[in-house]
Length: 233
Image (tube, rainbow, N blue to C red):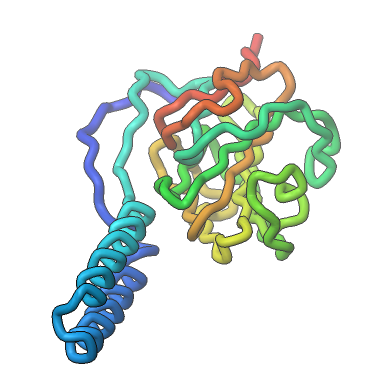
């Protein structure tokens, strides 16, 4: 979809975490005051403060919202990682929910310490967004993609290729937020959604796509090129 304008990166707190961090800070402050009066300034209070600082730091890291822009000049045929994390699946699968044919599947697992904002993997138009209730198996298990609670976003590129991006809840993650809307144009650099506390994102690509990542490789959302779509002749 044409040339890209590179912009400055910066980081902020994601809107999904604003209330959570505020309420947590208030709760921790109240607990700290309570322990101050109960245990005075002894070792118990010092340990508590350290533990709360670590927990809050992890939460702030989790809700970071990097403003990123793909570094390439052109996004035609490019599929970027929709999430920060680690590649846990690269395989050809039978996708029977929508495509009813073989697809190349690339899955990225997000640990508690990864940024949990999700990006659109390709430029195109959103054909539909569908949410499915389900279980909460550990996100890295193969059955999680089909059995866990999930949200599916089907995108059609300018060249007519269809790419399915699936947000999958995990054993800890209990809330999937999807910003994509049916019929809207979507672009790399835009947020597709957010998943709270440990999860994964699957990308289903047409056969013939060239996978550009390896198993176990770390990815950076909106930056790492995970595949190239088949060239149109």
